[in-house]
Image 1 (cartoon, rainbow, N blue to C red):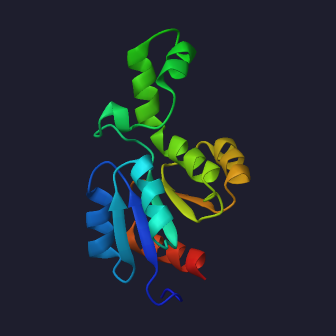
Image 2: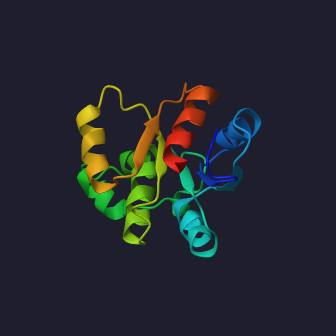
Length: 154
């Protein structure tokens, strides 16, 4: 069981799946939820959070709420603004990580919901930037999450 009597976990996701599943299947922590990077930064300024549970893909929020420079991203995608928006949506978790680091929250433990099992070099690079970064695949079990949280909270 978790050593910290009641850790607070901030869930950053564009839906409600993680909040619903964690609340139901991983009881104990106190959960907070926001649906964008900007909202996460605001909440982190106001509340004490122990761990962040972060989604990678954000395709259900308004484009205006996505972090990242769409103009620069469009240039990187051969002038295709649609591809640029898709890139920002599909990699929003990484843009949020960068914003957390820039705002002084780079040492905060983060669990990124993304399967890096075939991208170990990519994860190693991210881990150098964010030493307290962990990942779980979408098909993670409640017990695996519980064990990971126990390790992080200790």
